[in-house]
Image (cartoon, rainbow, N blue to C red; front, top):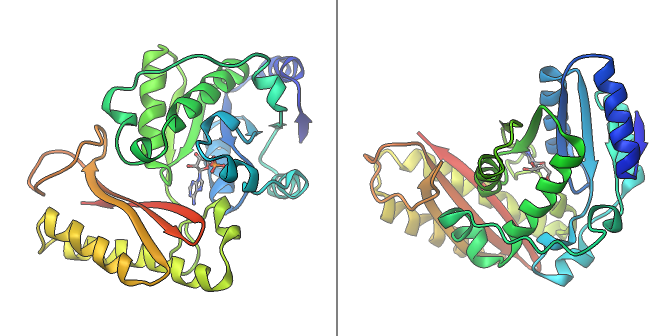
Length: 281
Ligand code: AMP
């Protein structure tokens, strides 16, 4: 496994991989890797001959400076995990100056996609995500890129980005990987105290129950039920729970509406903010 930090070296190594034949799969991450990230690498390795993983904590997507400062970083451990898995050809771990030699002033317009849920609560977040993904895509030029459904809205925004940039990169969604008690794996989980960690499992627990109840409860009542249940846990504070169309992310009013539906939630536990989502069929 080759570890590369400069974009020139990455471009050079990429041509060497392509000369061997086959396709390139790309898994962009912010590091602090866990099984969720490794599952993306696994899927990429099944679909492509060469896998490139990037590790880059992108400053432009953090609307909260404290969140950026506290974001867990451990490159050595990340490299050990990827080496152990044995599926990654290249790790691209650039410095901020490599990605942003000058400030990126681009302002993307994703219509309503980045205005709801996370977009409404984290101003500029998806613009920063689009900036870094667009830059990484132009450096790595993969055939396919792999993103987790854990960040459900991000996936919708990236699909839109690729369409707007008329890129041929195929975006491959990958299922959410969870801890044994149901908590969606996240780099931020390590920031939870032991007590908070125990209570955090209620998020997915309540989402799973809501899927059962969706056969008998209307959308508005179920939405209120989820919010109440989560807020009943003294350690949890709901920012939003919304049932939306999986593609447009517009609110769903009735189960009989056409299209797949997703319940998306953001919850604060102490200082940590976690997101999760569930598909309603
Ligand atoms: P991050 O490092 O948090 O930016 O995440 C990098 C990629 O890993 C994104 O595509 C995430 O959606 C994905 N990811 C993070 N956590 C999970 C998880 N629990 N299951 C599946 N994918 C995940």
